[in-house]
Image 1 (cartoon, helix red, strand yellow):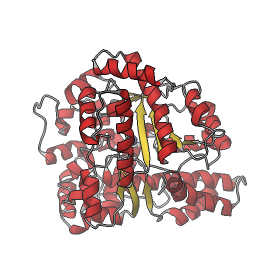
Image 2 (tube, rainbow, N blue to C red; image 1 turned 60 degrees about the horizontal axis):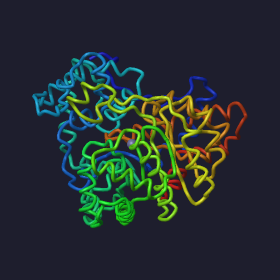
Image 3 (cartoon, rainbow, N blue to C red; image 1 turned 90 degrees about the vertical axis):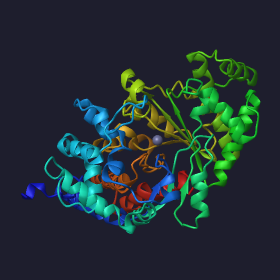
Length: 473
Ligand SMILES: [Zn+2]
């Protein structure tokens, strides 16, 4: 084995190469590198911690839950079937996880310079103790090594959660979820804090697959008849309070655009009835969703839950992949998003309310300095979520700080969230975010914009306090 095959994680990674800035960044990192992780938004399956059974193998652990991985492979002509992604029609896909891992090893070089590459290296070195770089000729040796590592009790999901120093982990759950796994975790006596997030898209968006069936489920689970708009709203309120009882502190909405509109109850009811009869158009769905965003703000003022909005993704862009493999296969593409006009009704009604926290995300970086920072730098209710998805990256987070800070400051942002399905990538993602913030602050100190002690205080806020405060943990 040559030295070039050793998997290294340089202690100064992602800091500036300028010696003075690097020295300051290192000093800032020393104050936050080991702080507990607040994970206020993500998609880890709570069943992991309810059951606490061993992770079966590296493919199941690192590859299958991560659509960042297979979108890159697909772009290079590797079929999703070869990666074991299940087909909607139940057709044949690769089930031999060793074979899939070999494909990953053969093609790992594709991730050079990408956040996925950075996260996976960190996970393998720091979480799983792998010392060789993943490649075509090391793949199977590393596979067997990770299998042995995963069989040890210290690598059970709950033990990993503790080792990662996670203070709280939010999952994302639909209103029709029984939250049985959350209940099981609480009743087990384990101290790990895993809480739900209320995300009602499957019942608020008429265009959602199985919308009508989801409404029936909502009736069943809430005990409130949702055959009227009034009942539907009551059911949402009841489910929110159930989520709160199980530790939930926030809601989320994934919307195509951040369009908001206030309809009268009669207008909303008319749209809802139309949808129940299967006659709602795409425009009806857009109007209703825009109205429900307003309703969710009203409910948040009542019950105190923090509100998140994730707009701007053109979901399932590739028809063939969608038809063959379904949702969430790495084919959601960012699109231009208008916040200023779309959010005006919401912000005029609720934006001046300091008791309310609305956390806004974007996939459209052109809006950072033109729209989002000016809005968040004015409306007391509005805060900016961290650089999201494709921009949750070394350069993406730097661009975010550079374009947002001068207008919105640091304190209209809410710290980092990992937004991941891939549980073992959580420490790597937080570490990258902390290092990028250290890098950004080090530049401000080196250029005498901030004194070192101000930066030392700020980096603790960005790494820990702001997420805790805005998500109410
Ligand atoms: Zn998310």
